[in-house]
Image (cartoon, rainbow, N blue to C red; front, side):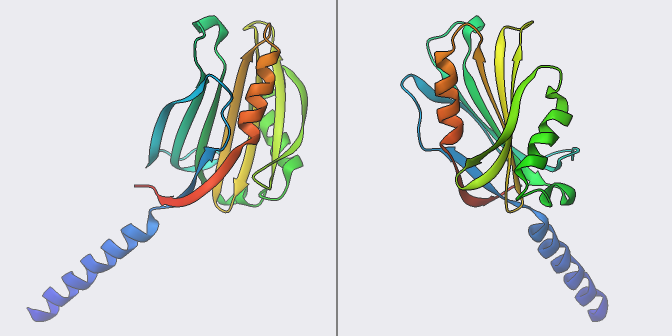
Length: 183
């Protein structure tokens, strides 16, 4: 009886330690510059769900928005951060491959330019696109820091080219924060 009880205690202890060890730690991003009129609109705390082509399924999100605009003139930057899958982790220092991944991920139809840039001293791939049907420019940026994958989207109206500077400034001001555990 004592051996059975000991086995159950050891098994439960192992399950508890394994469960805690499996919860990923992600680097939550932030921005260190918001132009006049911009604010943090919403934040989705880090949590786990279904895995995707790029992620194990653990992710969080931030949405920064320029206030005082009607629905047809929205300007925003969304930052998704997630635990990268093993294949994606191999691209951490390859901005060119990251920019090609963006195009593969669905921007090739409207791509205007693509290349590499730096965010918080990390190489990132970007693609800028113009969608004349919707009337918006979009800038997508992919970046990795350790095991955290960042998928950034900046959007501004075609008729408001001055908003591009604000969107770009917000994206370029992204900083990678401290590790936080996703549950």
